[in-house]
Image 1 (tube, rainbow, N blue to C red):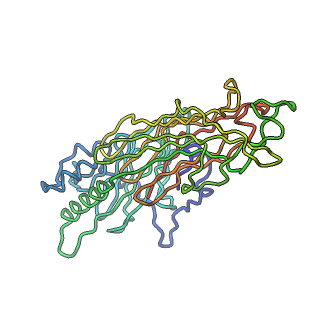
Image 2 (spheres, rainbow, N blue to C red):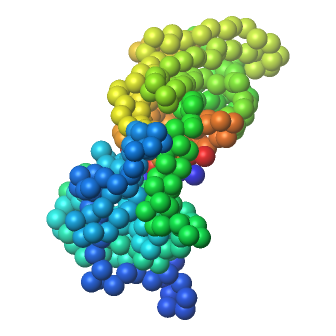
Image 3 (cartoon, rainbow, N blue to C red):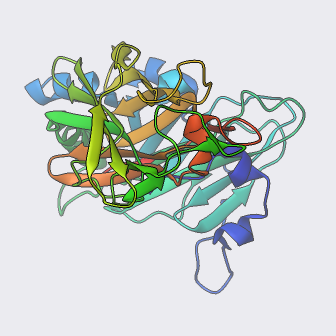
Length: 388
C-alpha cells in the first residue's frame, strides 16, 4: 500500500501513524549517539571489493556493490536510490543509512517497520542501526520533520537485506553473495505495467441541469451511463485508461490509452438513445528518462463529455510524473487531477497487483460544470511506496 503524502507523514505525531517507539524491554533501541555511520552518500567512491565474477556486472548494473569505507569497514552498498539522495549499506552487524537533507535545520526520524529507531538532531544526514539480525529484511523510512520552506523535503523508503554468513563462510563472501542475489532479483523483473483508470461508480447518472435547464444535448428525463463498479482492476469498463508497459531490460516504455464510450438513456424506459466517444487526442503516456534500475514516466488523462459543450471547464483531467524502480520502489514525483470521476492507479507486476492511489469522485456535477464551483484539483505529488 502507498505511504501517505509527505505533509501527512510529517505533520502529525508518529504515534498517531501506528508507529511504536522502541521500548527497553527487549525491543530494538536506537544506536548510541557516539556510533556513527561509516557509509555516506559518497559510498560509491569507496574501495570496490565486489569481485570479478560475471554476476558482479549484474550487481553493479542494478546499483549494488561491496565497498570498504575509509574506516576499514565493509558493507553491501545499495546505490539504486542515490540519484534521489539516499543510500544504504548492510553488514552482518549493522545497517548504515545516508540521505541528502533539504535544510540544515531539518530534523529526521528513522523508522524501521513500525518502530521508531531514532529522532535525530538537526543537520543529521546518516544513521547506523546495530539492532539488526543477519539474514533479516527491513523496511526503513527516513521521515523529515518539516521546518521553514519544506518544498524540497522528501521521505525516503529503503528496503535492506542484512548479509548472513553461512558456517565457515567469511563476512566478505557473504556480502558478495548478498549483493549479487539482490541484483539478480531486481534484474529478474521482465515487464511491469502502471495503469491510471478513471470510472463512474454509479450505473446511471441524471443528465445535469443548471437552474432547471439542460447544459448538455440531453437534459431532464435522460441519464448518462456509468461504469457500475468500484476500485476493481479486473473491470473492463472505464471513462479513461492509460497504461505504461515497462520492459526492464531495455528500459522501453510502451504507452496505451483509451476512452470509454458515453451512453445516453431514456430515464423512464431505460432505452439507449445515443452513444458517442470523446476525443483521446490529449491522452498521453511517454517516457521522460531512465537510469540504473529506474524509469520516469509522464501520464496525462483527459476527456470531455461528448454530449456537453466544449466550453464547459470540467473535463476529466489529470497529469502526473511517476518514477518506478525494478527493485520495487515507486513515487509520484508530481501531479494532480480533477475530482470527478473516481481515479485509480495500480501496478501490475508478474500477476501481482499493488494499489498505488484511490480517490472517490467528488460529485456528478463536477464533470458538467453545473455545480456552484468547478472541480477542485486533488494533488498526487509525494505519494510513494513499494509494489509486489
